[in-house]
Length: 393
Image (cartoon, rainbow, N blue to C red):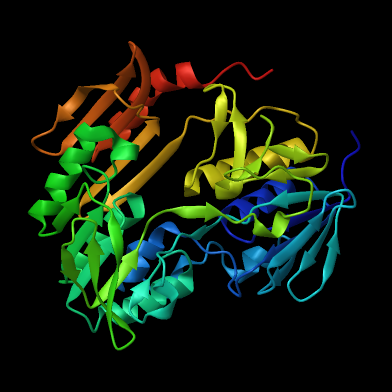
């Protein structure tokens, strides 16, 4: 395979920037173009629901690199002009403004867009938290509000609820799972998280879906649950997951099913790769397709794709990892927590909320969760890595 003379990275966030930086570190001196749909230079998303939303950080602090560092990459940044189409055969991307960008290799890093509720866009006071502009707009509304309802009991919903309580708001968290973050933590650890939120004053309305929004004079006034109960609100945050941003790939010839479908090298087609939240690749350790929505994977996958563009031809089989900060807790998970997995506390003490738990399925370690014990959690990660990391052939 001949090495490319030019690379086009579609998506100027963590995954796209990681790919670009890795290409330069590995000696690639060809042309690199980063195409971004937003007007901002690459920024970090995890702080949006925490430091930026709370006001602890000014928005520009979320920028991933200072401008001089970005300039030193000798890459062209084309911002505020989203990708609108791809011709995979000629490796040409058409932008919303009609610009045509060609390259020898293309990296798709367009991430996800936030899911919304029916009618949400017609009402004031209803927000998602996906972009920097989203977080800034929500922060301004929270400053003038008293009651916040968060629709969605996953990572983002739980983090926004914690931030809202930190700002002194009356917060209610609603969602269909029996406990917060059940799909990521399992019922036992998710139950501990639910207790933690309740202790901090969050009202939990879990185990039921949302049937709609309640409005008065064009502004949201509450959330209606499927049980018929209405939750009054001054502001509503909808945090019900993301949809891979693949609409622009219609007619491209790529396979898009819950993301851009890739092989175990993160390759979607000849000369076309995908990284980050939008990539659904074959994980050899799990022997299954996998799509991860977190900052760590976006960065690691960008590094792996850069190596493969330059000829490494190596499978990408990481130990999945994510963390969440809520109140004074940092909870991290290495690996996965399968449904029905057995939890064993292997370090620390649950009552003091400093512990490490190992999750086994059919006697095999599949995941490790640490609550305020990062060093000890990393030590136990090895038991999971032995299972999830196959030989790189």
